[in-house]
Image (spheres, rainbow, N blue to C red):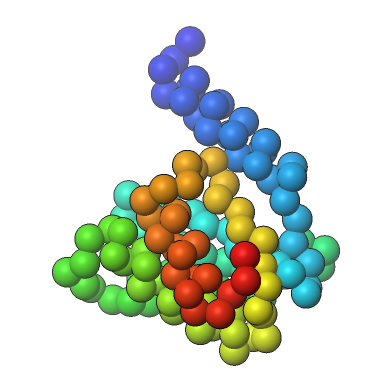
Length: 118
């Protein structure tokens, strides 16, 4: 079996395991975090209706000299502002297949510090 194929299967299994336990509603949407080597993306999702209520991307911050964790913290602040404008104060945090540290933890902490109750 191909090594990359094994890694992808484990990633997919972790993601499905996390998503099986988490669901968002209009009153308490799911905060989905996706990270890649180049960017970070945050969405506030109402799973019942299948709509994205608010979103933020690292591309919106433009070019910065910050490292990836600092960028995640700034993006969390931006996402929290957009969520509060959309009337969201409570949410369920979906870390996906990622461990809760580094950029994922920085996003979560920034959301909490800026008015989103997770």
